[in-house]
Image (cartoon, rainbow over all chains, first blue to last red; front, top):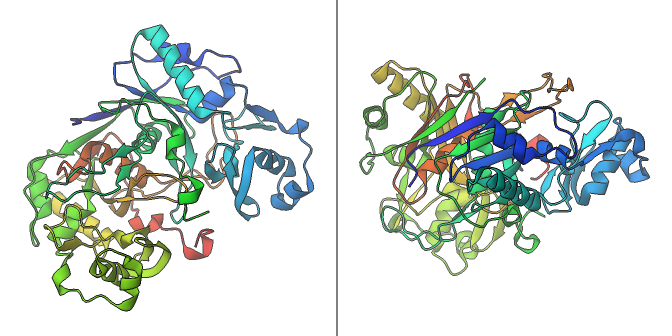
Length: 243
Length: 243
């Protein structure tokens, strides 16, 4: 059982460019310990992976113009291209299911902390693959076995505000399944799954912030090593009561 | 800005009974520091507040029998009594809006970690008032100004697993509003609210667990003092795209 959890922000990273060796930059910025979970903001990963779009290159469709209301229709065109389905739209707010199955505002397309005005950052093509690559690179460089989460801020149904959640996961459990375990009164817990990777991503957000340029944090003191994936956290459509 | 966050579980509390002085028990179990946020599991608060129901005292209605499927209809009767509205039902799963406005499975009614078989624990009548009382009691006993969160596990739409969220809040911000702040590229953030109290509750869950009998944790190192309420985190019905 965990005795104490520490969450340490990682500072001092340069402005990231496509092709940068994010693993090397992170390994230089922090001394990792076995069992650490490194949480990296999706935007940092997307930038080094070149998942950036210039609005100048985008021609909006009629549907994008309709969704945009008074706003820039090119942004909505990019959102539609990233979406499998628009779940709810109240222009200019669009909640969409991404091609990965995540349901989030603007299909994860974001103008803040982008590469300057006129650019948008998209989600990684495969956040689990991004997490795995980063984990492997960190292992190569440091010899230390760590978990990796690629995180992003996400709104929720019924509750105000965003919390950070895990889009990509490597080397840890995404879900902790308590089924069959007993509580302290002997009552057997049924079907209780805890989304530990999302809780870890949220804990990291508390030290990363949105405006501070802290793209990563280390969460230390957990015992969550495993083979989870961010995809584990997506509710399968056939079990989802809210789609 | 936060340098480092620590999350410390609080152990050694006795089995709680109605009328117990939870503040005194917690103050004895941990040395609080100014600015700490004490996260207490809803179930601990509900027990000392006597929010426990014996199934023997419950007569199920026809609606409860229908929702129950093959399960104990008395439990569903209690869920219905705690609900303002059933949001989704796929028997025996019921997602309900509680009288407080929280949308959660079984309206927060829980059999695990209850007072033994045949009892159910309900949510506090007013979790914000519970948090305020606990904060005042801790201030009285220790002279230290802390924040308090009354937390509970909650499912989400579209994502698997539960995360802990803040039902009641005292002495801290529940939401951090970044509107008008600029990101590191100078882009002005619009309407970004971070549900910090939910992220803190989730971080605490990582050291509390569900089966370990650790009903509380201290989160240390944040600067979140404020006058938030758990009610701030409830999406007003008129803005909610998912009800």
